[in-house]
Image (cartoon, rainbow, N blue to C red; front, side, top):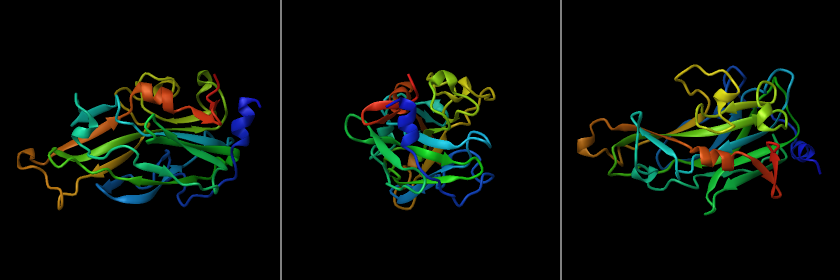
Length: 253
């Protein structure tokens, strides 16, 4: 079967999400913050399609794995690992099987079986004037007690798909790129859309706040530091494509 028809045939009906376009103008999490250790149902909120005349026929989501990821501490690159700040990061997300928005979906896993993302798609897709809420369970990892982390922000890369193309045809009307600028991948937002210099407005985020009552900062940490984690280019190149029954169906080679 032709690859275009595979993903187009992998999708389904649509779902009117509770939030309107002006509430979720970008694709974001509807619960973007949590206290460490909390586990709750969250949603990827697709606020609009690529334009008013296109349907969103799929979405691809990638969480940074922590392997090769960029770690920033108060904006300065950290040479260590995410385990310096989080004690149980990895395999923190799990996708629900919910066909209210799309017929087909699956998790993406690394070599150890940890969930590093997921995808959903198929059918006629989401009209440009409606929204979709894609449900999944998300656990806020615990913050390392000996660290000075007051919060850890995880950047989540998302591509909403309106037409099945190769990366050379990404742009207006084919995809919405909620991805990093300047990461060094074909999925970088600034390669296909205008991005103001020095900004990186694309990715969604999930911020884990320290439970100061039960996990207070060490005395020498002051008010603590803000930690951020971005995926590596290698991970985005590996995990962003959608594979169905072992065959890559998006983007087209």
